[in-house]
Image 1 (tube, rainbow, N blue to C red):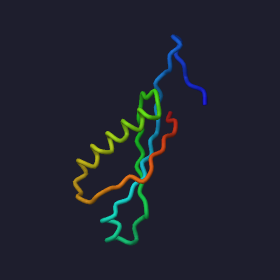
Image 2: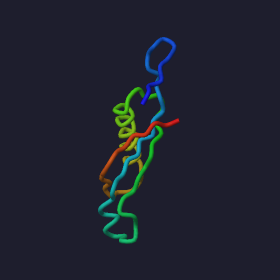
Image 3: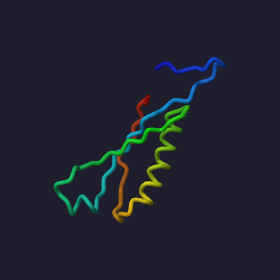
Image 4: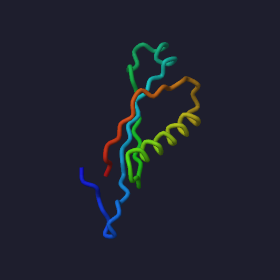
Length: 85
């Protein structure tokens, strides 16, 4: 995959889409009809690397969990990164 380069010859920050797959064991055990896995996608702007995009998405994930208003546990099962817009 080619990297977008600025006129100065340095990499341009890009938007990346980070998809987090997770389970909610307590919730799912009480609700057998719910999906076996859930996903949440974060659009992370201005990232130079996949690692930076994952780090920032996990920071957002932690913030969302902390402020969700629910008490059940969420366990991340996978993280993937795709180029965004």
